[in-house]
Image (cartoon, rainbow, N blue to C red; front, side, top):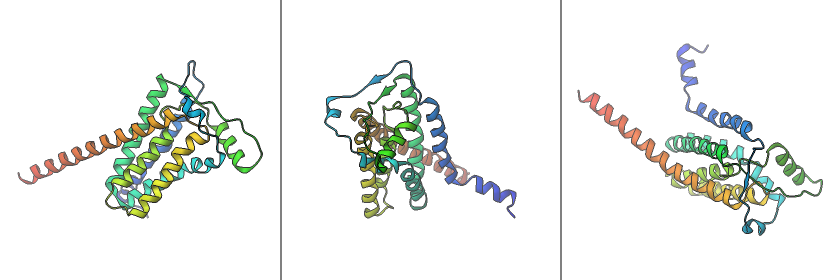
Length: 220
């Protein structure tokens, strides 16, 4: 039978922090509505990018990739887990703030065919309104995982390469399935890069402060 203390330990487990992801997802569904005013950041460069429905596969694995990689970080490199999850939460909240004041949209591709890939693209189009585009959360979160893996000394080179391949496949997929434009991608990557660096400094300073407090207490 689970004791009261045991229950406290279970509820305090760091993996529960992953619930921040679906919580943020619920907020996303509330704000993913057609706004009164909307901008389009489509450029000539986007005209050069073809629609490639095969890329719906990496696009669709984004959420499992996010969860599984964070869980991997948890067991392999705990500080990287905390840093990446903190950076994700802060970055997504910043995205939501941007969506609230600067809403953008993306012109979708015209679909043809009844094959599985076309069906998957149509499913995404139907269930994800073409708003909340700038910056791209797909891109920023995938880049965060890539950035976290590359800086970790606990993760092997083969795993880093695998995470990198999946990351950049997802990032490319956002423009090939016409869910985002180039500016969305660039903004997502830049936001992820800046906030990941900031999260590292924040956690480092907090760890240093705790260490100093403990040392001061022991010296009394």
